[in-house]
Amino acid sequence: MFKRLKAIKEKFSFNLVLTVKWALLTSTFIFILFMIFAFITYQTSTGLMVKQEKDNLKDSLSQLIGRLEQSEVDLTIRNTTFFLKNSPRNSSGDLTAETIEANLIQLNSFLSDLSQPNLSVSVFNSDKKQVFETRTTGLAYQGGDKKKISEEQFGDKTGYLATQPVYSAKTNELVGYVQLFYDLTSVYSIRSRLLSTMVLLVSVGMVVSLVLGFLLSSYFLRPLKKITDTIAIIKSEPQSDVRLPALQTKDEFSDLTEVFNDMMDRMQKFIIQQQQFVEDVSHELRTPVAIIEGHLKLLTRWGKDDPEILEESLEASLQEITRMKSLVQEMLDLSRVEQVEFQHKNDVSQAQEVTHQTFNNFKILYEDFTFILDDDLPHELKVGIYRNHFEQLLIIILDNAVKYSQDRKEIHMSVSSNQAELEIAIQDYGEGISEEEVGQIFNRFYRVDKARSRHKGGNGLGLSIAKELVESYGGRIYVESAIGVGTIFRIFLPIKKEPTGQM
Image (cartoon, rainbow, N blue to C red; front, side):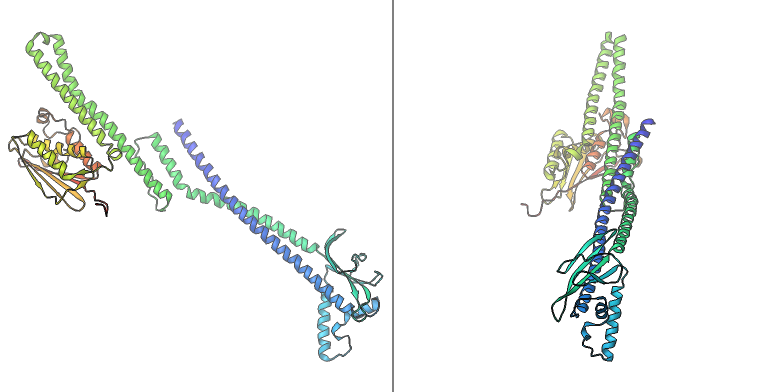
């Protein structure tokens, strides 16, 4: 009991580890894919946000320069305010209703851009002294004599700093400088929240993928668990008839289940055959051994002094020894028949050659019998059976016919075929077999008339060997009989067709 529990525990541990491994592998793969997707999404979205703000900054800088370059003198707070309020396209003063409306729309849009909470605009004169600013930053002019846009950090603020000198469009003289600082704190805050959301989603995805991976692996490995359960049961109970249930999945596990069940059926068949072999041998040998022992005891006590008793005991013992030798040989033949599938699976024999040779041998052996052969084969055929086994099969049936045909000594044998099978019929006109016993004559050690069978030297194994031989090669054997009329044995063996195109 302890060993069985230990085996089940080890089996369950194996399945658990494999399930966990599969779950970890699938979840890791999903996690890596999700991380790549999250990283690309994060980089793309934050990059687009920062790029958008940078483009807006460039646009605002371009509009500021376009307005302030209308000045012909050094920038001051007055002319800066004036030029910021007026569109550079209508600085000529030619105002109409349409241009006034267009200027108002452009002014509102421009002032809206400058009023962004994250944007600080500073205007400096040619001496780099501040003359205008939208928000107090305390920053001096950080640029040079060329346009520059860069990411800078001032104190606890990081953002884009854009600087550019302003040259008069009319005199081409330097009239001042413009400096814009766009605080990216809010953008970075959004990016930080997005990163936190991504981390949270990845974590949740990891947990979900682990759970789903475990559930899926448990589902797909369920047939494997059934196999291990079945093996554990068969290991503890070798004679158990437990088999794997048929799977409808039509996959590798379905094929494995079919192969496993077939393998277990064969193994159990071999085990049963081995046990039956041992039981049959021990049972059949018991009688001749007991007879020999009885005669030896008789001789030991007083029979050796009586020549008649001595001769009778020796003759009986020799007879039983001969029968034991025959029995042992037949049992060996029977055990070898059970290995046909492994040793002679692809062997073939010539149908006409073997049947004619065996038939002629019996004609020579039993001259007092009349043997008739009807050969209806149109040409030589190959049957799927080892030649020695084919001969042995015919000898068993013909020998059986001779033994039980003592009144009318006539044996009729016919050979014919269809497209798939060779049919051999062997008919005698002997004692016949009752309807009740017909179904048992192929059982091991079964004798129709036990007393007469023993007298004729039969052990009751011949027909068992014949049936095993025929079925081992995929054939069939039937018997038809009537008391006082005779018996017909019909044997069907598969025909081996020549490959197409072969001479």
